[in-house]
Length: 146
Image 1 (cartoon, rainbow, N blue to C red):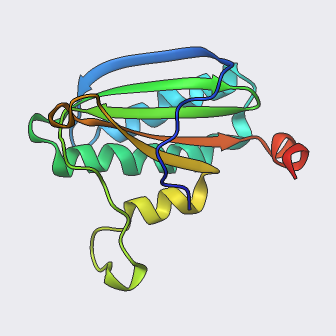
Image 2 (image 1 turned 30 degrees about the vertical axis):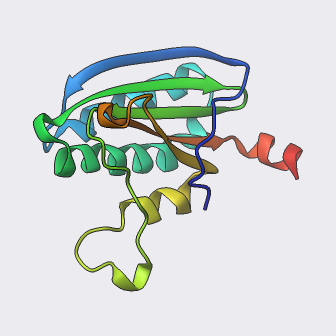
Image 3 (image 1 turned 90 degrees about the vertical axis):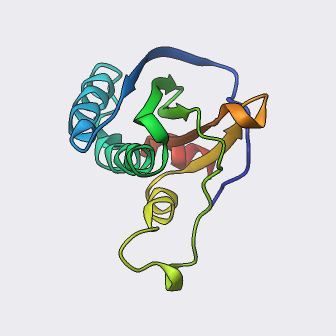
């Protein structure tokens, strides 16, 4: 599980981003947008894992961010995708021990299980929020890295 703060790697290209107020059903629409972009980028094999991770990050905004405002960015990153969800809430997410998780609190555990890397970047001023991100790499890129 990588929850270390990392800067984006050089070479990120082809991105799509927008700000919005999310609600209970927003994740469905965001998954569709992500799937469309993955198709255009010929990264359809990443759709299931990337959509699940995006759903968890959006659910955290719905549950924990007053006003539910966030910015979503989807970026092609070489042979993979990087997705960022930024909000103005200063609290940083912390993964919970699986034994502590009952009805809620499993989102970051799920994200860590399905993505290759993820992390949190606090904004310059701690009171201005953070960006939670994840990366999924295509299988061909995973094999090249091994």
